[in-house]
Amino acid sequence: SLGPVLIAIILMIIISKFLARIIPGRGIALPFFIPPLFAVLFALMLAPHFAAPCAFISGVLGTLIGADLLNLKKVQKISPGFLSIGGAGVFDGIFLVGMASALLAGF
Picture 1 (tube, rainbow, N blue to C red):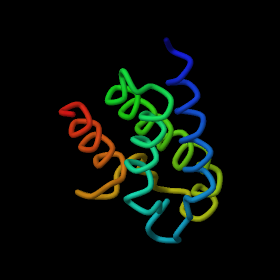
Picture 2: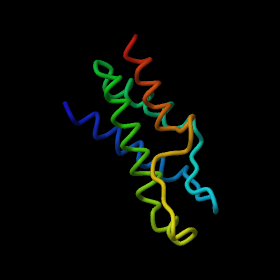
Picture 3: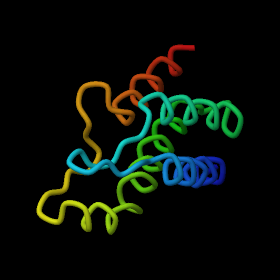
C-alpha cells in the first residue's frame, strides 16, 4: 500500500523543513544523521513489511522536498547566482539514507 509511504514522506518533509538551516556561503545545512534516523524509524513504524524501500523513498524525497525545495526562495535571496540541490559531500544525509536503507534490507 502506498499510504504508509506517503505518510512517511510527509513526516520527513516536515522534519527536514524545520531542522534545515540556511548558511550564507554554504547553502542548506541539515544534521547528517537526521534523514537516515527518522526515515528508518518512520519506515519501521509505518511499513514494517517493506521498511527498506519505504525508508529509502521517504528519506530521499522527504529530505529533498523539505530541506531543499521548500527553502529555495531563502537560498536565492542569500546567494542568487548558484544553487546545488541534494549534495553536501560524502556524508550527505541523502547518501546516508541510502546506506541505512540498504542495511535495513539485510535484516
